[in-house]
Length: 186
Image 1 (cartoon, rainbow, N blue to C red):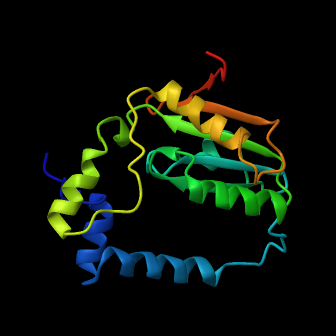
Image 2 (image 1 turned 90 degrees about the vertical axis):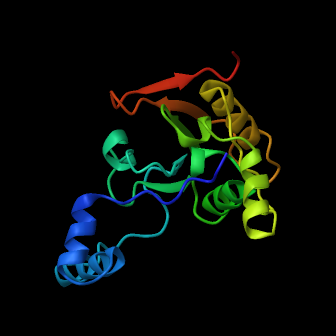
Image 3 (image 1 turned 45 degrees about the vertical axis):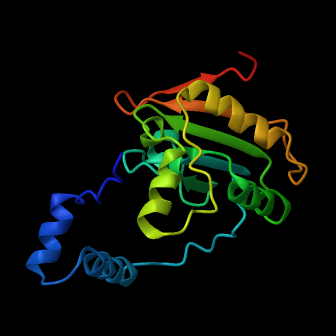
């Protein structure tokens, strides 16, 4: 299976960058300059107001703050491919809890996730292409619910985390916008 080439980004981003003679990154930097011109320091602490950390997939279709009714400063948002609880997620959650006071963890996977179509063979294909095998696991899965359960279990059993009693997992439906809670015992 060949490794897929980069997909083009949003046409509006690409055409804006082309019109201005720059790249998509140039457009983002320009947007930041407009944002900063009206920016006022909200005077917030780095500690999330709601004392919650949300771990979710990096999928661009999921606007976590809107989907969960969150405002700036309410939560820590930790994202990666699949929303899988890896060592780096445990690292971030440990800092979130021990240094910044979070007590609850919400895990969100989603329908139509790209990791449903990958396998660990992806690592072998990368090694063949670039001559070096990645040190990380793909963490692909075939069953969303089971992977959410596995992620909940990884959080609940981590010796580094102080607060493992309020850990809940969900699947976000990208076509309806609804969350479906996963029972950790099924």
